[in-house]
Amino acid sequence: MSLTDRTKPSDVCLNTDLYEITMAQGYWESGMVDNEACFTAFFRENPFNGGYAIACGIGQVAELVENFVFEDDDINYLSEVPSPGGGKLFKPEFLEFLRNHRLNLTIDAVPEGEIVFPREPMVRVMGPIIDCQLIETALLNLVNFQTLVATKTARVIRAAQGNPVSDFGLRRAQGPDGGLAVARASYIAGASSTSNVLAGKIYGIPVFGTHAHSWVMSFPTELDAFRAFACSFPKNCALLLDTYDVHEGIKNAIIVGKEMEARGEKLGAIRIDSGDLAKLAKETRAAFDEAGLPYVKISVSNDLDEYTIQSLFAQGAPIDSFGVGTKLATCDPQPSLGGVYKLTAVCDDKEEHWKPVIKLSEMAYKRTIPGIQRIRRYYDANGCPAGDMIYDEATLTSRDAQPSVAVADILDPYSTHKLVGTSRELMARVVEEGVRFGEAETIEVARDRCHNALMHLDAAYTRFLNPQVYPVGLERGLANLRHELAVEHVHAATATSE
Image 1 (cartoon, rainbow, N blue to C red):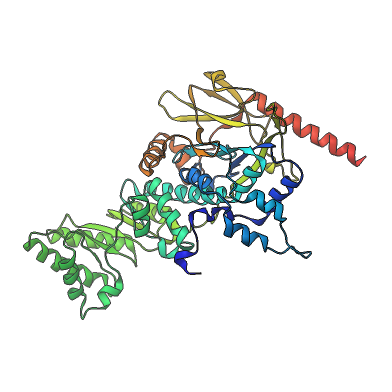
Image 2: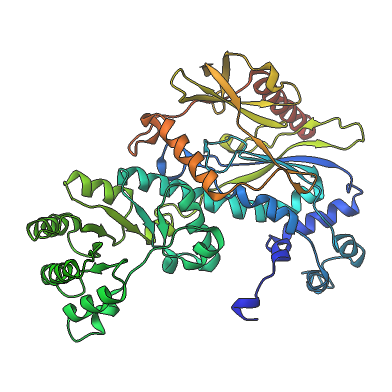
């Protein structure tokens, strides 16, 4: 199979872990086809030792649900999957159940580009338990990576202090799909452009690029190369200075800049991709200013991240834009978000009597939050987020919101947070009964939301070193429910062991 025909839109149904399908067959054989469930996707710790994360990937969830169907070739493949103990893994009758099966799910989620915090329900999935299970892996694959990339990008954008940042990471990304996800998520989080042309076509992201070292090396001299590029792209001329020697590159770029001026054109920028970037940027700026070319911008690249950019500005480097590649595309130094998808409530009757459930663990931090969860975010007088309350909508509605409330800390039930101010519901409907809810949001709307959210988040939470922990707590009724379920399971386990 070639790269071009390796997938079709509906192949998302097999973009999953095998145990999702084996569990689906188990539910089917156990007579649980009509059983309803509620699952919640969340992460346990902020990435990069930071104080927040940016929800991303959610804008593609509705498309995932609508394209999730087992077609004939998918069923044919599954029918041949062997069982480790011999024979075929899946029963023909179950595969007929799956054939052309559509997901009848209702999904609520934090809007894309919004700020989120550990253990909050970033995505809530409700519907037949089989459908909830089948979508788990594909949904986490969408949301985990893009949330991680968006968060990394937001940190880089903060370090860049308003100067443009372009995603240069395609060649170092984890495959073509990873490259597209990086371009999309980084743009939502504030990147000005991407080098990824396919991402530009698919998502409408501005694309940017000029020439590489190989261009310069292909000509007899560096000056010849610069002149040729200026002639080909007089309105997109950024010259790479460090193929041989930056100081000679500066002289040659100034010559070309003056020649362009004489033709009524302007050299747009120069780029430095190696060496002491702060020192070289200062020397370059001084040389171009002295030559009467103060409008020429300085761009840098070379394994940049938020810390190197912050350091460059601390050294007074006169840099106008950044090309950030490897460390953005790979989310260095944290390769994964660690987001999880946990069952929080079940319903096995026609009267919709929901039963909250909890997962306990030998490790206390892995204990889940039960119920059909939602989030209310409280804001101070300046419109800045002041704290979040997670509640169970089965026992508390959004109409019950109070201007002042004490919530129990998620990890420490003996600690409380007092939330005061105006509040609003954070989660919104994304999919209803298997169909996209409302009109699809543009990537620009998510980008604007992210910019606005970050602008209003206190610097105590966005700083890189020892950020403040944002207050997130459980509504008192939910905290009590969690405690009661935990005690109930402990007592049941004790009684069984006796």
